[in-house]
Amino acid sequence: MLYSHSAAGGRDEAFNLSVPPAGVVVSVVRLELLEAVSGLLLERFLWPWKAFLASRGCELDAQPKDAVWVQRLHRIVNAVDSEMPSDLQQALLDVADLATESAHEQVLEVARHNQLELFKINARTTPEDLAFEVYLDHRELFRAAHVRTQSAAVERYVEYLGRSAALPKDCHSRGKQALLARALSASFRERNRTGYCHVQLDETEQELRFLVIHGQAPCSHGAIETDDRRGRVTYVRDKHDLVVYQKCGQRLLVNAQYACEQDLYRRLFGRIFWDDEHHFCVAPIYTGQPLLEQGAASLRSHGVRGLQKAVLRHIQFESEAQAHSIDWHGRDLGELLDTPFGRMLRREGDVTAFQLDLLLYGHRRPLAVNVRVPNRVKFDRRRGTDVVEEYLKEAGFMQVNESIAS
Image (cartoon, rainbow, N blue to C red):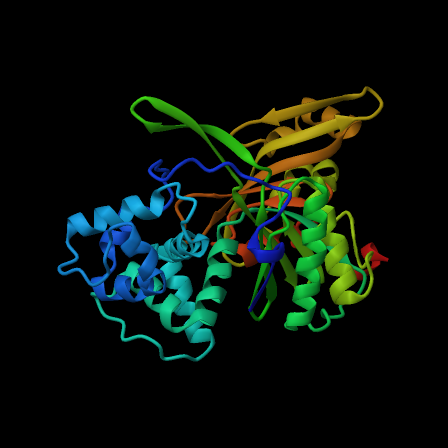
């Protein structure tokens, strides 16, 4: 499910971007993607842009579609061309996101979740063919898998706690999504961005995931146009933000670059889906108090299933009295917390950040979990998410309950 908002005609009047003549080539679409997909699927995919491609010397009716034809297509879709259909490049980039082995699994998982018998999977079904086929024949599934793939790669979040466990109102409504897109668009314009805003929603049993695509500030750089001429390319890169609502934990997780954007999502999601701009608050979700109070004892496994061991790799202390901070790094700082030096730090400072390496059964490499008090956490959510959250709660590093929000 998605909603897009942009200025009239799909172009923002505030941005007059200089575009050099056709022929300047930038690396946007990978040649490997075009070479790997079957010819029939590629032809079906490109058919809506048949006239444009023909005007650039790439006929879809040409036979055979050999390596020379594919290389010509590659040059065309990567050229800086003022007449290039913007949706052609964007569609190829979106398909490329799902043409990896990990994304391949996400597509199949979404299909199973929706109880769809879509594909005759065999050893010859490549991730590239599957990505193009889903784009062409199952667009809603493609959009859901695209959001899921994007969210799986995100590690760093700022977390906000809801004031109640009430679920969002009409989050699947296109009207509500349009309202969200318009509000975000207006805010982006105020910060010298384009008004383009595109919202996609994917729902799982535990989460609602909103992928927000919008423009960054314009950027410009030099480009060689011919053997004796140099020009400039000015363009707006897109940016992907992710907002995740956890149904059980009543938490809003925001992945965005700037603090003002993080707060914008906090306020707008509360206002639009809960009728309260302050529904989500900045609460002390994470704390380092167990390290101060218990020392090495706080790092035991606490009986968490799947967890072999927790290792403290980094800790940051801050002392208001002496107005300084101390960063302590090491292979295993747990036992050192109980030394005279460690006890001195525990008495005089507060923990503002720490890193744990969690050794999980069945995994050779530890899972790094970086916590910054009070509400920031970073770890690879593609493995061990349940173990991480259970351990942080059992050890006292994560304190989520209704009394915090109130």
